[in-house]
Length: 337
Ligand SMILES: NC(=O)c1ccc[n+]([C@@H]2O[C@H](COP(=O)([O-])OP(=O)(O)OC[C@H]3O[C@@H](n4cnc5c(N)ncnc54)[C@H](O)[C@@H]3O)[C@@H](O)[C@H]2O)c1
Image (cartoon, rainbow, N blue to C red; front, side):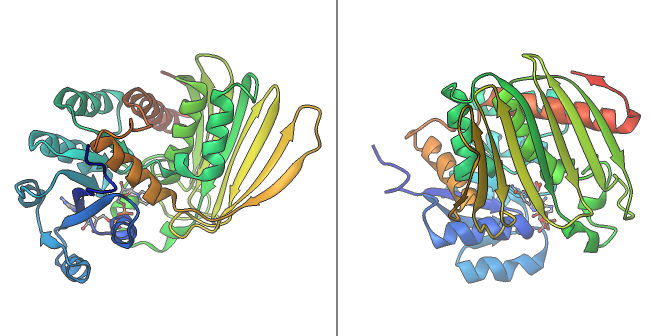
């Protein structure tokens, strides 16, 4: 069988903005087991970036989907386009790696997951935090029961990168990016929370505008309760310097992971652990490239080498939680799922 290592997945990168360029640069450097052969962006300024990488360039997705050399697409486009672009790619028989969020509502997420599944196409998601080595360790410890019964999660992923954006930027559109930093960063934390704790039961959100003109608010926190018991406190602020902290607490141990830098330029992690009957320890974890490793997992799934680790059910439950968070942010009351 040809593997993605010997036969990289020929892929179109759709959207060459901040994140599309980051992924294109990583893929070009190698190791993702995919190759970008076509780039799409309606902004003509992106053409020279594609030319520098030696890949074909189109201003519309249809041209890339008509390219017989393209097996898959990576969508790094504004959120409101994801649903329609997934449908277009699936209709053309292409595998899809979609940047987060998959959708804004449970029903739209269900529709995209079903489209890919029914067509036998792989759906990947830009939740690279799962591929950060210390976070992957947490997931393994939890799956093996080593943390005992999981009780609580505390997590914060915030930055102030958007404060300098022009007011017309889609990132500052309350419809496309509602509830403070929820679709920018918080969505990664709810993905991990749902992975660890299962489906959410209800959520109460506080979303305020404390230090900016950002229309969706700049500071949000969500208190989530899960159907299986346990809770998560997740916060995502758009007005404080970068911080990324994820902590999970179980009856046998707890682990806290802090990123030393934003994942656009990883600089390693600081991990603090407390295990029952043992002293608390702290260690550093060397830098890795989780964005590349997520793309590689997708490529391997396309080649049938391994199953993509983020399931459609997890994607749907995370978007159902996002939908409830947005509703609760609007009314300031508990929203049931
Ligand atoms: N996984 C992560 O950690 C991470 C980090 C940053 C952004 N993202 C995600 O990446 C996506 C893009 O975000 P960004 O910050 O790069 O935004 P951006 O605005 O910098 O880039 C979006 C690009 O899409 C292009 N575009 C617009 N309409 C298009 C269309 N119809 N077809 C093709 N391209 C089109 C724009 O011209 C722009 O170049 C979002 O889903 C965002 O949430 C993920």
